[in-house]
Image 1 (cartoon, rainbow, N blue to C red):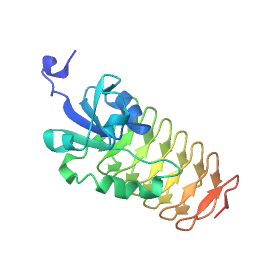
Image 2: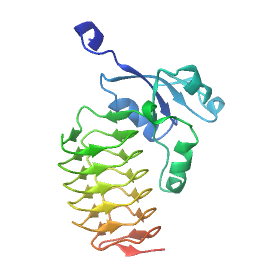
Image 3: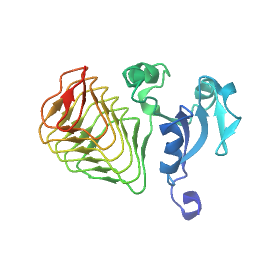
Length: 216
């Protein structure tokens, strides 16, 4: 049933950028709060006109649909350092950013969330945790009490961020990694898949292993 038919609010129109990776997975997270009216892609001609029934559009759609909110989820392990620039390049004002929480994610009412967030199925954000803006949390990851995750950070699947951890801006936490209570991850750092971080990680470093050691 459409929420509007039951007297609830109508779903908000949403544009998702880009049409790959987390952008496609975001479709499964919308619930009844959003209605995706298009993917934004910088090269729409390289893709079919529609993907999963959703039109693939150029950046002009941002101006053509001023009523639509925007979810921007670019970036991966190779491109995460450019994530902030890619999002800023859309020129979206703060009030248009969406926060998308999968119906099976759990967020404490005492958590603090920024703008342009995507929390996938099974993600858990507990009491007094803070997520900055432009953060993605993939399935079954847990952000524990008083942890802070900086803006533009990607938290992959099955990550555990223990209590009191501070993750700087623009980081990448690989799938299955675990961060011990109270550690600090410097801005722009990458934590490899399956790693266990037991000590602080300097800015811009790449660490991996159990316990995690600096690779570069």
